[in-house]
Length: 188
Image 1: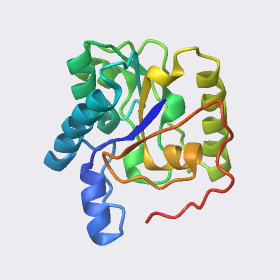
Image 2: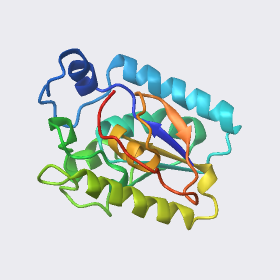
Image 3: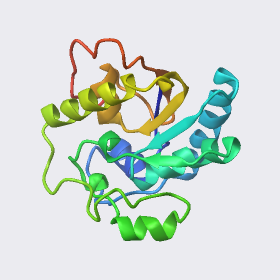
Image 4: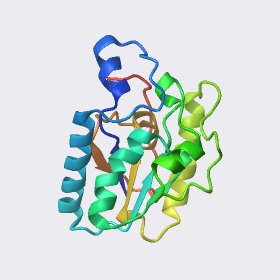
């Protein structure tokens, strides 16, 4: 499968400049973030020859906005999967309720997620790593996992691969292989 980190969000822009939580909940993509999403869609289509059959995205707005250009080009639905959400640690990790997302994204099936689908308190790293192991197992059980793009977040991708990814960056991940040997929870 291919793991794609969402494009630059309003939170990323401010946090990178100040190293302080700017208090933006469920941030949207910046103009650069939209460009990164478009560029990722083009690169993934070229890389795979259009052989993508499934797009999975976290319910955060920034992930849905990043998945949109690829879904549009391929004519595929986006499967919303809370397991691939970000580690809850900052204001940006407070999501939008399911009913609000349903109004903004009427073409997405959100019926299977809770109204409040993000944790109420900071999520320990071990819990995110556990979500990543569960998702890895679920994907490994699918025959066509190699034709899947997963639009996710820094912490979840780190838990899946042990790698720190930049906004709009992507990499291949074999869910049938072992997980990372070690994970260092520090933003680079």
